[in-house]
Image 1 (cartoon, rainbow, N blue to C red):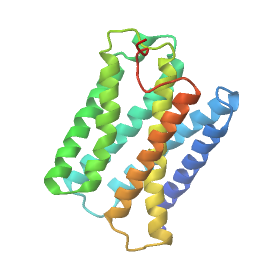
Image 2 (spheres, rainbow, N blue to C red):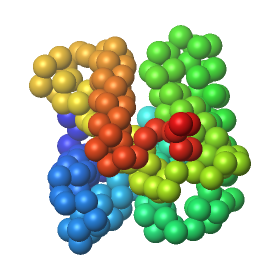
Image 3 (cartoon, rainbow, N blue to C red):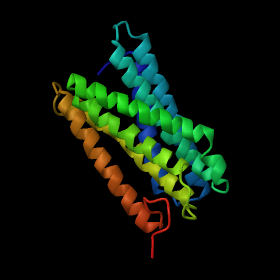
Length: 228
C-alpha cells in the first residue's frame, strides 16, 4: 500500500464513496436524506476519478497508450452512469430532454469505446479488458436503444434508468475495492485473475440487485409495456 499523498487521498475518498453508496441505498427512497446522500455520493465518485487521474498522470512511471485508453474509458463509463442516474430524477417529467443530444452522445461514446476495449482485450489476451468492455457495450447499448425507441416507454422509465445507474455504480465502487482488499489482506502477490473475479462477481451482484429492485418497485429491465 502506497503512502504517497495522492494515494492516501484516493483511499480516503474511495472509502467515503462506499459509505455514501450504502448510506444512500439504505435510506428511505425519495426522502431528503436519501437525496442529499445520493448527491454527495455522486460528487465523491467524481472526486475518486480525479484522484485516480492525479495518481495516473503525476506518477513518475511511464504509462503505455493502452493504459491511457483504459483510464479514459472507465472514466467515461462512470461519468455516463452517474449522469443518467442523476438526470433520470431531475428530468423525469421531460422524456425527450432526458434522451436528448447529451444522452445519445454519451451512449454512443460508451458503446464505441466498449467495443474498442473488447477488441484490444481480444488482440492482447487481456481478460480484464474484455470484462471492462461489458460496461460500455451493455450500458451504452441500452442508451442507444432507448434513444431510438419509437413506442412510448413505460410510465416510470425514469426510475428504471435511476436503478440502472445505481446498480452499475455498485460494480464501480466495489469491484476494484474488493480486489485491492484481497490483495492487501489475503494475497499480496495476487494477479490480474483476482481483479477479473471481483469485477465479474460485482457485476453479477449488480444485475441481481437490479432485478430485485425492479420487482420491488415495478421498474422492469424492459423499456416498453409488456404485451398482453
